[in-house]
Image (tube, rainbow, N blue to C red; front, side, top):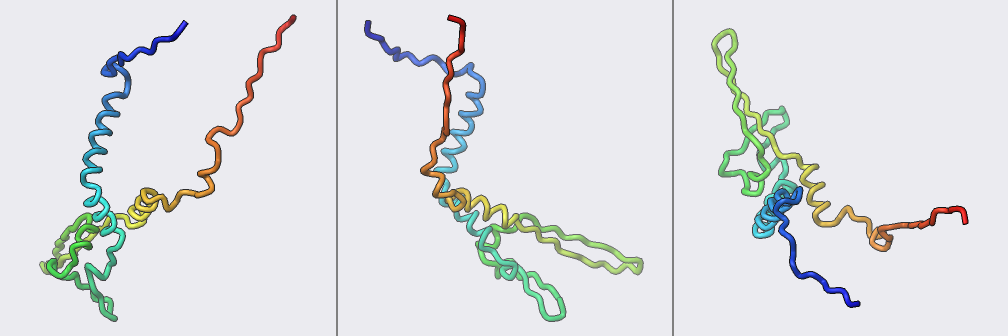
Length: 141
């Protein structure tokens, strides 16, 4: 007797996790459409040096470069800028500037993983299942 394969696919709408899979697929199409921009932003964060944003002299005086002097790629690495103003007891106001950059190590780790740099080439030849032993139950004869 020949088996007939059904071509009717049941609806997946009520299966658990389908909505989250569909959301992930939609997000991934957005990333694929903009992968060059994502790659440029990540590489910009990874390649930014502190000297792209500020300078300092032998006395330890730090100066932040004017915004028009900071290269475009370095602007991608800036996570936040915060100005803190304080008054001392004499009424003098002093300001400090906090510049937070994105985590360079985390960005480099993400780039290395995405590029396959961390993959072990020896793992390609290893089987995914090492061994399966099927043992029939022993019964009385």
